[in-house]
Image (cartoon, rainbow, N blue to C red):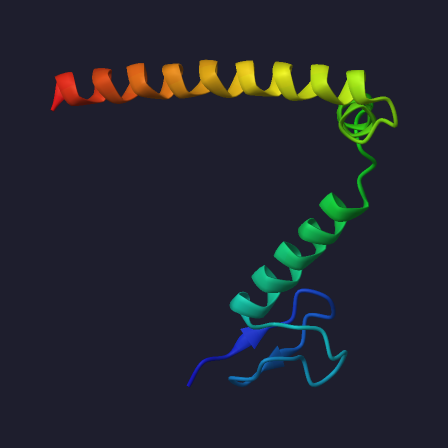
Length: 96
């Protein structure tokens, strides 16, 4: 039989998921899941950076020339990323 001590009120509980005194989670997997979910919620509510807002505004700009320039710069960056990934793969294959 497993006994767990509640981190909030200090009451010892039998093998249960929630404290019988204060109803807070005491099972480690539940505590971890709640912490992970709160971290995800904090990331969702985090405001976007100025660079991300600039890229989004450029991508959906009402002038055709600005959208074309965005697509050209994006394509060039993807080509450089692909070349870099290829060289990283080549280096990984050399080491075995």
